[in-house]
Amino acid sequence: MFLENFRMQIRTRLALQFLLLGGIIMIIASVAIYFSSASFRKDDFYNRLWNKARGTANLLFNASKVDANRVLGIEKNNPVNLQNEKIIIINFNNDIVYSSDENKEIEISNNILERVRLGYKVYYKQYPFEVIGTLYFTTYDRFVIIAAAVDTEGSARLEKLEIILIIVCLISLLLFFIAGWFYSGRALKPISDVVKKVEDISITSLNLRVFEGNGTDEIGRLAKTFNKMLERLETSFAMQKDFIANASHELRTPLTSINGQLEVLMMKDRSTTEYKSALGSVLDDIKSLIDLSNRLLLIARTSAEGPVNLNNKIRIDEILWQAQEEMKRFNNDYHINISIDNSLTDSDQMIVVGDESLLKVAVSNIIDNACKYSPDHTVDVKFQHVDKWIEVVFEDRGIGISECHFYFG
Image 1 (spheres, rainbow, N blue to C red):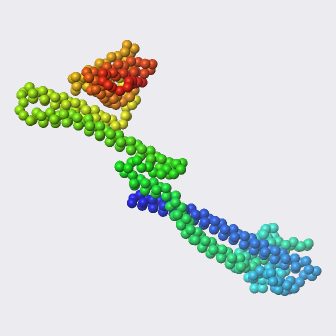
Image 2: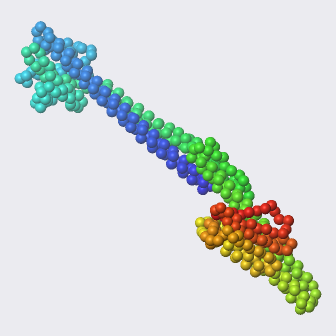
């Protein structure tokens, strides 16, 4: 349940991030479209207004006789006039030689006239009019033309574009969220499959593995890592299971012997000698049990903590002498003969690198098995220096196993 909620939280966050990213891109694109359209409308309208002003001036000054009233009449009946078109032509003395602004709605300041006469095109807005001022040259004089009109149609188209862009943005945001939700769900599906498979894995089914997909993407590498962890866990549990089985088997033998001897001892009264003999046998079994328990505890502790001292320098001869002493302490009938080759003349030649506890356990187990399965309970331990290695050989008198040599470096 927690994993499912966690997955939903990730899916929601991804969908919201997808929505945010898509929304930002869509808003930027819409703003760019709107201002580009507004700039194009403005430029296009001012160009039309300028062309209309130049056309009116040409009509006025290129005629054989200047007749402002005649031009005004022509312009009033011109079907291509702009809405509320106003054209004013002013000479160098600031006298109005032509004007279609009968109501004098357009305000013209001296600053505007001066800038136009300096050669600038002047654009400004006098609501609801958009005004342009430009300079017109004739053969003998120059005139200032002020043209103004209202771009109702262009403004209406711009308003419609604004509404359309807002609607498109809102719809796009909704579509971005839906697409992000399904996209994130599809992207998280491999993780969901891994989670479902993990939920099926328990201590009794560590052999199961999660699907690794192509094994190259992040999910595949995660699945591979998880499967490797499962392999380590499976190996660890198998070792633990074997250890428990072996420990139980090893402990059962001395305990069964002690139990049998005590039951026989309790069946009837015995003499002091018989009691001592039976108790001595029980004591031997108890010593063997203690020795076995100590070795099992050492193995368990070493397995739990891990071989953390693998780089320690240890003298292998000391390990052998210690193992001999401990074996003979609990088993008086064991005969452990240790011989050192004459080639080992320097104490540094007997130093090996490893974990002292693990080496002691390994050597003790080998000696114990060799003595236990030899008819005379004897083992000969020989070690010598071979090149850069120390060779340790264990020889017993039993049926044994194939020849075994250990090399320590």
